[in-house]
Image (cartoon, rainbow, N blue to C red; front, side, top):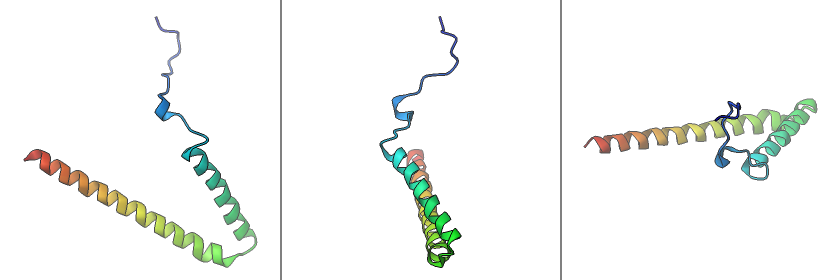
Length: 83
């Protein structure tokens, strides 16, 4: 018999680990928001004009290259399976 709860229990791997990488990313987000907000309020051109745009461009490029490598590895794997 069901207990009337329609929610399925979470697996241990799906839980948020506050003291692991998940917690670290949350803390880094708040630190980043504070630093960028402070730089905008105080007109710090080095952070607003150089650090933020270059960092975003580098991170976006790295993510895109990682995505491309996964797509090519996947396509090579599917070609080998057809033979």
